[in-house]
Length: 525
Image (cartoon, rainbow, N blue to C red):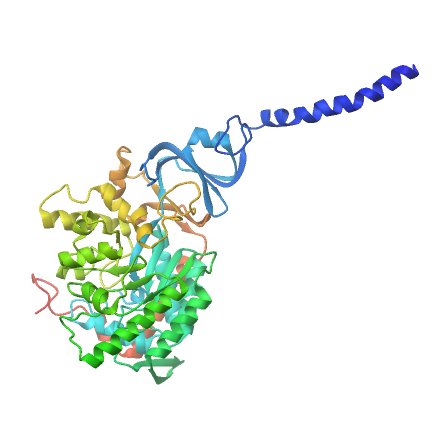
């Protein structure tokens, strides 16, 4: 009996060892079968979000379109992309998003917009020159910190609801009307952007001279004028860079800008040119010091050559907007310097001159799309601008094969990411990239039948078809309900601040419909 007890005690360690060795196999049987994508064979990995059952337009190097596809997201990154069946076996999700009858695709990227414009839509439109002059007056002399906060909330919300997860925004209505006299305006703007949650690149820099520039600072109903030097505006820009670049989990970036000079229409004295070049190089040096994107607005024939040969400011970190009527020499300069171009097909500049998009792309230049939003007459709906780009250049060449649907989709996603120097993180749905993903609700008359999904997206979809938006792995909108801000409160604040800015500057007459509006074929004399 004693011997039997001894044998039993001796067998316990052996039995325990066998049980421990068998535990992984027992554990694996309790989880979904499968291997590979989730980690160790047969063991499902944990992820935060699993999107299943959708048509995934990946924009990856093979441009895969996966029917009944899935995307796994862990923290702020895409963990895996594949079929729904494969990823269901490989991953165990904290929450699952059903994407049946939806397209799953990368968030759209807008290469060019303007802060402030959201509150001035249509103001002075059809009155020659009035809208632009109104922008200059309001931004420099009629805006407050709350104005810039309200505009940021409104325009970031608009981009979000249209599926634009990344956007470049000039801090003002172009290079001649930047609000860079004091960093408090930029602070308020970026605090609002951070609240909405989209990815934002704010371009700051000096206003066009001559210096000093006049600004007006408001305190309630009282105001005082300020004379601000080039050096002061550059100092404000650097303050915003130090405070904000890389904030909000990397979603907020700062870019540097400098006014575009047009030598054919604005000739300079030798002393004037020397001063301008020194200022341009000082702004460019600041962009290089902090490793920022450098951008300029309103390039056209002659200005690209001048920026390269006289200013020496182009390069692979430079993004030039509009770029209309470029010469063959200037296209070659863009290629040689690897300078990137943002084409805004819906902008007024594109009515006055053509950006040679196909020629630039064929020469090896990276070209992205921009909205030039959101005023006086356009929106942040990048689906609209994709469609416009196709029609615009096909009409020019009288050739319906120009700019295929796939190409314009690239120009708003993966090519756009490359133009911004962000292609390692953005622009496609691939494992390891940032989880910036949108879902389009395709169960609608204008999008049915559900065949040829890339064509449906490029030709028929619009921003209001966006159902769900994920940025940096966070669901910001689902079922078109925005989670980060109260939409009604944003709209009410926008109305209030627009009214106040117009009142401060005495521009209420620009809200009227002009005389030549009805029953004429041309509104302007």
